[in-house]
Length: 472
Image (tube, rainbow, N blue to C red; front, side):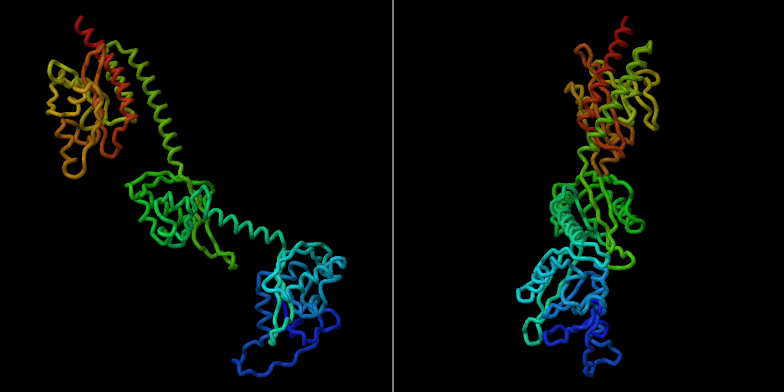
């Protein structure tokens, strides 16, 4: 705190001290301290105390047993405007730092801490040197002399609004790290979690303490590179201006889960240094997987509906019904599959009637030279679709078997996922459609089967018309 007797305040509190009695800021000079055998060049105790008190962030003043101000630091000067030279030596706050009408009450409450155990907290309206009033919150406690008797009181104080701001900040951080509806993870400069709140622990699939100090790569199977890149960017450049959506795949006890996290980032820096020192990154996120999947499904449905509408208009302009069928399939393939095969029933077997190229992307065209028998073995997905009069979905396995999977089924070599939909018209089975996807795409799912069945129904109508027309 601001000064000692050598610079206007005492470095020791006690009832036997000369509290001055002279003009404000003046006091008797103490007896020079005896040589205690300390290290040469070390500052006297009073100067060291003054330096320590002046370096404190809190405003602090002290009173001896008679109520005379003995210590006053720079933060107290900043808050109230009174310097240590003006404050030290005054008796109480009456007439200068507090209104005379309030002086007795303030003095009584402050000095009561001398005989009370622990600390006492009060709020006072004090006067600034410029005449303004400031509401402060004080913490005061008694000081004991060498003989154990009450020797005075010290009082630390701060402006109420600053204290309230601090309390709000602490309360906010505690709420975020406990009960927030967003995940909060604090990571250090090595990108290892140091604090994880309950929401984040559930999202990451572990306990709050079990996740601490572990590399993010142990928790995130896919997407960890993007996450770590975002954290490195925040450490180097600061927080981004808008939240980012990160898709990640997590390793959990139930298996791998793909999730979408809407994430915001904050760079954390120490408030105790003149230049910001990075402490890490605050990562806030919320799981928006359900919403994103719903958006994707809605977009997919709109696109497929649009494709079917365009396909119907194009097919209606085709004079040849088989040309209408292949046009429908060209529109249906967009964004849905890589290949399509049309196998029609001819007696007891299936014959290949139209298909997309096996070796490159292209339109669905009738087989050159006319229909040829499809050499499908027993249990082939296309045959099972005809037998069941329904849709069959299948995918290649992993390892060596996946390499021969497509060839064994007479499909293009890059095929890894298949969906077979039966062609039905007027209560008759006309054939089967086979949609194929490469290994870099996901397997066919139930919504894909519904779309394929819709396409198959329209293609079956065109094929039926083509057969009727050919028969006449």
